[in-house]
Image (cartoon, rainbow, N blue to C red; front, side, top):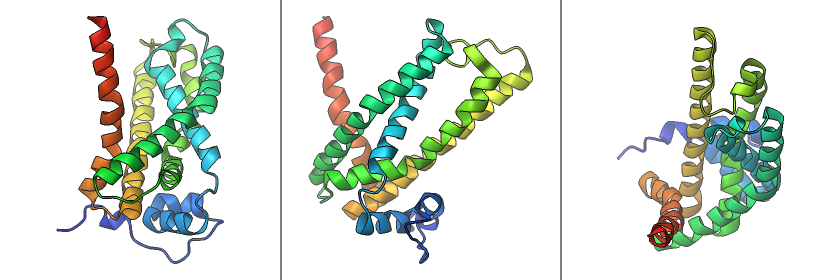
Length: 215
């Protein structure tokens, strides 16, 4: 059966240390293979910190932290929290993917998954570029749970930013799946399962514990 990601994982013979940030967008399979073989720890810590900041800012926006805090306070707290603690979550996630991957007969180790998480996060990290125009356009409303938008132009601009960020997030997920296929030698379906299984393993027990203690 034809792999739906075949067009996205074509190889490129011109991968080198100087163009990894560009090639990861267009030829992720070859780029990740090169990174895993030649420089598996390259920029991993920095990328995980930036990815943590992106997640923290997104969480601040989703939770409407601007309802009770100024935009500057939200930004500072999100950046500090993301930089200090976000990468820890990714380390745990890498370990969980390695562990659950073994249940699926995979052989990937935690360090390989940390590399995959870091480099697959680049499209999502790129969404930080949108933060400046978003703050300029929407100001204090950006981090509020119910932002007040005065005109249709601002409304559709806000929607447009959201669509772009969603596309970048999906792109990151696609690169992650490709990376898991490389490390684990899985087909696409099994790679997707390996990506989401840790979430079920870690989150479901927590939900059950919270539910039991509440009652």
